[in-house]
Amino acid sequence: MTIMARRSYCIAFAQAALLSACLSGCQSPSVNSLPHSQPAGPLPARVEPQQTAPTAAALISTYVAIAQASYGDALLTGRELEVAVQQFLAHPAAASLASARAAWRAARIPYLQTEVFRFGNPVVDEWEPRVNSWPLDAGLIDYVAASYGTKSDNNNFYTANVIANPLLDIGGISVDAGNLSPQFLAETLQNIDGVDTNVATGYHVIEFLLWGQDLHGTHAGAGERPWTDYDLASCTHSHCERRRTYLESATHLLVSDLDEMVQSWQSGGRAYEALMATGDEGGLATQLTGMGSLAYGELAGKNLRLALLSHDPEAEQDGFSDQTLWSHYYNNRGIRNLWQGRYVHANGTMVSGPSLETFLRANAPAIHAEMNAKVETTDLAMEALVQQGSAYDMLIAAGNSPGETLINNTVQALMEETHSLEKIISTLGLQNVSIKGSDSLAAPAH
Image (cartoon, rainbow, N blue to C red; front, side, top):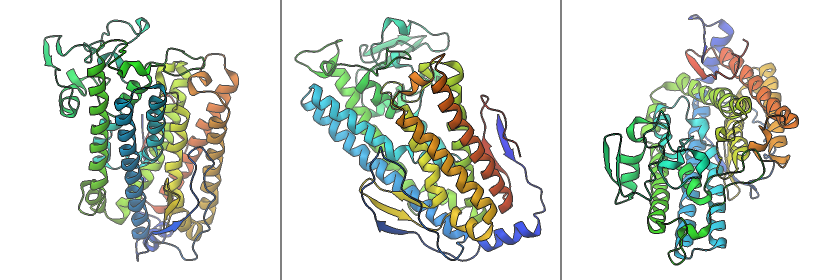
């Protein structure tokens, strides 16, 4: 379902004046020093707004600065993940595997805050499946439990197990998988046979290789892959050399892909130039498209409500590691980053600049107050989710009434936030803004 923010061709005089005020002049983002931001802590307190209303050019400048900072952090933590994986492979042990898993969790924090840049930016949306595709058919990559099954009506490569099979001949397709190089993963194995769930690259593949399947269903517990799966001296589940190569290639490829996106957001890069080509009004429309689509269609619909309706633990995003609730939490923080015009680096420094919040505070105080309240309500709902102590697959279990209430409260908060975003779009008189919808949710009321 696609939700179109339909606007009349003629913009009312008040709307035109408001947008005109936003489209003139320029202010720049700044970098300030803050205490270190703990990944599991509450969101930083709101920064007091500036006295004069910012302009569209200033808002877009902040938007770009936050994109550059958050993708930069994703690259930095991706490199740290690669180092941790190399250390684990050099000295396989329970402790080094735990360190690699911790590095994966840390690497997700900045990346998840970038997902607000997907929607409305075609360059980013085209690139995103290379690093964050899910769900994935794990049997394509490695061994799986008997409960996984042996075949799928939709996927000939459902149990191909490329780690165990250097030569594949499936469904009339012959594949030489002798060299599990980054190039092979990206150019041959990723989405092989045109199947989206044949995911061979990105965060979730690395997650599977570090944790293995979560076989606990809707009970407590994540994946329990043993460190000996990567130990040549005491190899478990066979093919440890090829499993080591796959993990090394996948982490190297992730870093390469993240570096590409960092460059894409620099002046002259594809994402940057595509955004600039839309003009000031187009830049504002892009920002609001990203915020609304992530809040409504992606978070509320696909990631929260759909899994709750199905009670299926396989529908959760970070299903191998049981980190799904934190994925939702940091996705939501990405929305708040753009609303407030600031992003906190892992080292505690902050990129900040003119924001939608400060603009609307000066020019449309009623809608500003409404949106600010909705953002705070969503933050509280997300905090309640991550602090309650159970993993997401436990909350969606059939008959878990408290879990259902927590999830529905968060879904409702995100939907209400989207309603306010649509009012902002109308207030600014922006044309042709398309907010991603979801079949699991009713269309928001206008």
